[in-house]
Image 1 (tube, rainbow, N blue to C red):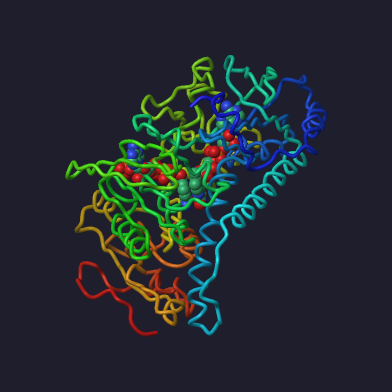
Image 2 (tube, helix red, strand yellow):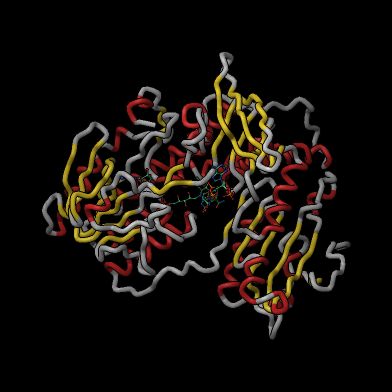
Length: 523
Ligand code: FAD
Ligand code: NDP
């Protein structure tokens, strides 16, 4: 979808702050102290998202002359936003806030059981939620600009592409071009949601995660296509907010995750009102005169076709790296031929020694904010601070913010069996009942924990998986323990904090192998 076609529909999400337009000039004069001429830098970072901002600020700490370029191309539906990248504007932050809004709806139902006199006809306002979320996002955009200014990083609101391996062209919003040179470059341009080109109507009528968090109009009956992080999280909060929501899943949920956990997470969603249309793929989307989107899809098992109207269709089928318009071939930077992501070594170095890449744009990296941030900081410390510490991409914890959250670190049961063999793996597990679910009589069938361990010796924990309230908060501490070589022996000799859900992790004692009932009873 071309820029021109949609430029008339541009919506501004994050907000560019006019008062700050002069700041880049201030920065420029501050940074010229390093002795380089005005268009030459020690480091130019392309991409002002999680990784790029962290890397540029860290580099400036060493007194280097640093610029960061950030430019947001509009989504096919015309959404654009401010400084900070995916996480701040169209990812983690607005997603977690909308997830929280959905959890509050659930809590309001619980509150009655705890004695609160909550009226039956409580209303929810999508417009109020979007306004509140976008106000917070704008405050973060502002905060990032202030930080760049304070740390003497020059911010250039421009799209960067290479002219040669030491020179880039920066195209500003008004079309003005400028040439910038640097000794080192960091590419941190992230990715954008994919749309299936083979599905007529998809690009014209559907939205993606780039649009949902700023959608002016309440989404109404929604079809979410995809079955990984973004799809499940968006479908989860939309259901929680009261919208009639369906997921269309072509194969399995959360590919790459422990499949027993993934299944339980989606079972919970189904039992709480999300419809899951399994083993189906969209074929076309047509817009009717009344504005409804008629989606035709095919069942890949029976071969049958179905058609149904929706008010909103959201594609969450993965993300493409933003490498196509960077002229990387002019700089000699190699891409993976299939994914078009940048190939980088364990020092984040590309095929060109002074060009580095971090974050989502790099092949075989977990697409997570803290990963991009840590990689960016460590890279700057190596480049300018004499450090030799490299990023450890192993045992990175993550949480899928589904209605019942799923926190996980380390290997899935399938992966551990594949690597070590079933006979060498011990899986400890437990179904448990969060205390806060008891009074409101919430369903607890999917509250489940498992530790995948080696069978020998102290039984090193290879993977820890937790489904339940505040899973991210629970799993974060255990991930630190895993980095210190956590064993089942040390896990089970840890004294729990009562009454919490996290204590169930240290209380697990039933092995899958035993076949005993893993349901936790009593206090
Ligand atoms: P980005 O943050 O994407 O930043 C790249 C920036 O570069 C963007 O501003 C882009 O517009 C800009 N850019 C692109 N090309 C150019 C160019 N040529 N010139 C100048 N600028 C350019 N991660 C988590 O850890 N936790 C979560 O809960 C979580 N939730 C998410 C929810 C959603 C819906 C999505 C989509 C992602 C989520 N993520 C989450 C992933 C997280 O947002 C990314 O891993 C992270 O933002 C990647 O950072 P980055 O620096 O690689 O790229
Ligand atoms: P993923 O690449 O993880 O998953 C893509 C999903 O879409 C899969 O379920 C895939 O199914 C399906 N799919 C792919 N192509 C099609 C198609 N043509 N038709 C129908 N279905 C299709 O992408 P996401 O967008 O969910 O997430 C991107 C990344 O963002 C994640 O890897 C994650 O690292 C990050 N993220 C992190 C979050 C967090 O930390 N909480 C939250 C959200 C995102 P199949 O399995 O069959 O291929």
